[in-house]
Length: 353
Image 1 (cartoon, rainbow, N blue to C red):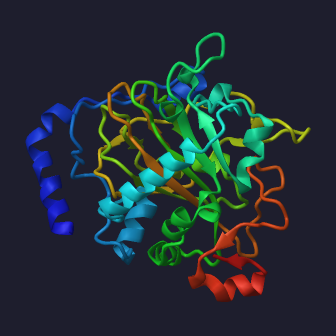
Image 2: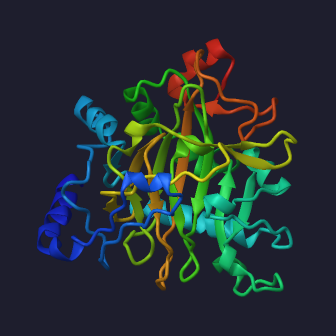
């Protein structure tokens, strides 16, 4: 309950000194082309700073929405029960166990060197599996067991698996979308991220609006901690108010349609100054604005850091999802919405789940 969470956060006051270490980067670094240093703090158990924007409950109040719009992210404690987290973890492990590892696609967490193959580009309506970069030796052979080498599962768990569908189309998430003024929220992408012990790679500073672009920008990320997340195992970091600067870059299919490119092609250094360390327990939900800058460090610990993410875009008239976005669904199986938006879906010819 929220009283328990308040007590957990209150304990943070005794550890403020050890969490005061922050890496700082000036926005002016973007002009130099140098990679921004990533912030660091030090902790071994989930201890969320009291100044992190946090919701008052599972139903977003006007004050919660205002906080989200001001800061660009919002922590919602205890959104999923730990038992449900365990069920999702077991289901993800079952999916990996049944995956044919002869199909190899590596997910690069370095945005500047990201490459794409047909397996990746065709994954928008499927359950697909992507390996960690550190899972292979120089000869291309796996250096660890399959279940410890997978980076993530994506990108249509919400429509292809019963348990993930149940969690993804939770009526409480529909209510959050309504509170955030969505007219017709479309569930576009889901990912189960393993952040494997020892080899879970760095995810550099990025914005969801770069990868799930709409005109105008409309994507919101729902990031769920499946396990306790600490600095040691690569917790999420978010930069307050970084969304105020907009999204300067887009990831898209290239002219051939069989590859991808950034527009503009030149690297962009995103601000990480003042990044807040989101050490949270399993079951926590973090809402992320389309332009919020967030990232995570490598997992060098002996513990995994599983997370599940849902990305929603606006599907109402006046908002365009471009045909050259990297993630596409076939015409006969388009994006779907929540049952709570059935009236708007019927008017727009959109399916509900």
